[in-house]
Amino acid sequence: MKAKFQESIRSVYSSGFFKNIDFRKDDSGVLIISVLERPPIASINFEGNKDKKTEDLEDSLNNIGFKIGRNYDPSILDEIERSLMISILVLVNTMPE
Image (cartoon, rainbow, N blue to C red; front, top):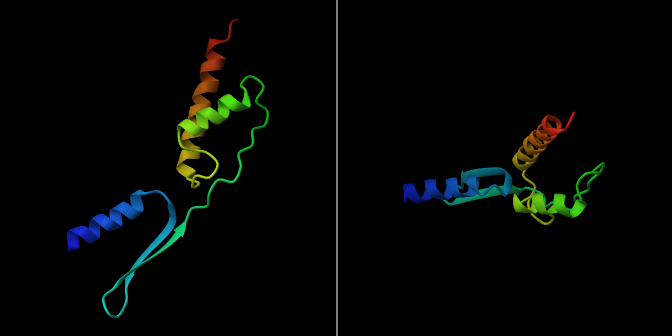
């Protein structure tokens, strides 16, 4: 029973759907799980993209799970930022003289 409980907790935490999770037992020993869901992404706007089409940028984001209707996950933004920085560095390093 304890192993199932621990696995349930891990499963809820690792889903990535929740901003906050609170576990507690009531007086009769019933487990109560309160969650605060991450908000869904309502829109994505691109500004200043001269070298890439908006559709290409949207496809790239969709491929990593960042799209309208999905739950917002700030760790994906970190991944996007790192990816963009690498792309910019590669672009700068490959420009002809």
